[in-house]
Amino acid sequence: MIQEMEHGQLVRTLKSKELLWGEGGWYFREGDIFTYREDAVIPVRVTEGYNPSGFEKTPEQVISLSRRPEEMNWWELKWYLENTELSTRKRRQYEVQLHLKMAFPFACMVFALLGTPLALQSQRRTSSAGLGITLLNVIFYYVLMAVGTFLGQSGLTSPWVGAWLQNLVIGGYGLYLFIRKAFNI
Image 1 (cartoon, rainbow, N blue to C red):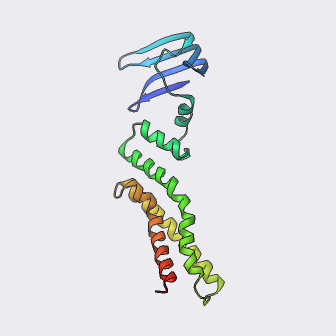
Image 2: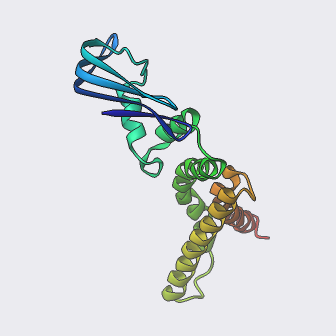
Image 3: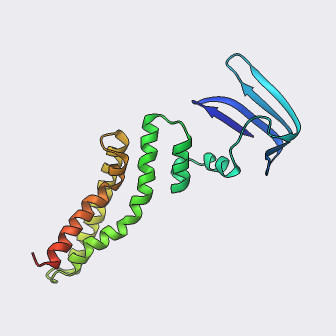
């Protein structure tokens, strides 16, 4: 069974014992198509044949629509945003999620950039102090990520800035420490 929605309203239901995908599109065997209008439901009985309904999405597109956007990978979420009508609030939320899917993997580089100058400092601290600094940096990263996500989803910043805020702030600080250490400033 496939249900088609437009602007939050059910417009068509496709039900079939067998629904196959082939070169000519969807192929039905013993099915029904219900088209919903404002004042009526129009049933069409399909015994066997190719898609008379106008439903053109490929099986991959149907599968990607069955998942929640939070479960989609970057490509699927990008396609979803391009092909789905959403409220402004939902669109911003998913745009931030799309950018976070790229920003989060860069955390490794950001922490390497931050950790290198800290590791090159003279060893005046105990090992537990180093662990404490590391934990504080990670907590600060996640706090910035939560703040950036909120700012991006609420519209106070662009979704890109909201998703990349933690990398920009901590990466900028790590770059500052790195340059300072490299040139003995």
